[in-house]
Image (cartoon, rainbow, N blue to C red):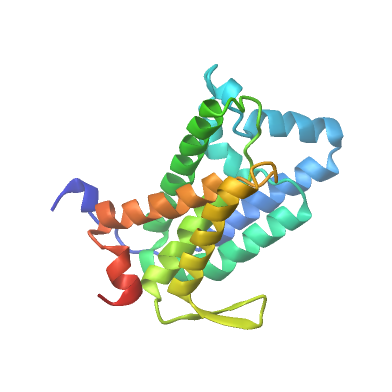
Length: 212
């Protein structure tokens, strides 16, 4: 068996709750220890292309733990809880952590190149959305018959939800560039999750999503 597909010994240690907890602690520290501390932490942890060009490569990971406001962290952590818990239960904690950080980091790297190409050297990329969009794809692949209620009202099968979100992000990437939302990062999360399933598991997500 290829080392790339060598499975981890299964354990479920509640990694999702640790990730959520770390995000909340960082958020609370940034927003309750004063504006100067918040600006310092954002400058040190956010992925800012100009700083990456000067060696701040750790921000490809740390940007996932910084959130811009209460609604930002609330919806990200809520989505991580809803989709991440069953995905971790399916994958096991070690595999889930590898999946989460690989897809999130690659989404950050992809965003870096997009920003550099477009001349946005001082844009600060923050938030776990890239990794969370990857987790949402994983949820749809593992549970294709699951029904998700959008806004608690509209029932959609998980694969339809994923394709719908992908289509919206693709549209917004070209029509809402100045919205402050990193739509390309979200798309990258989907894309790298797709590649992860192909490379790591030898699974074609399309066939799992649509039973082909």
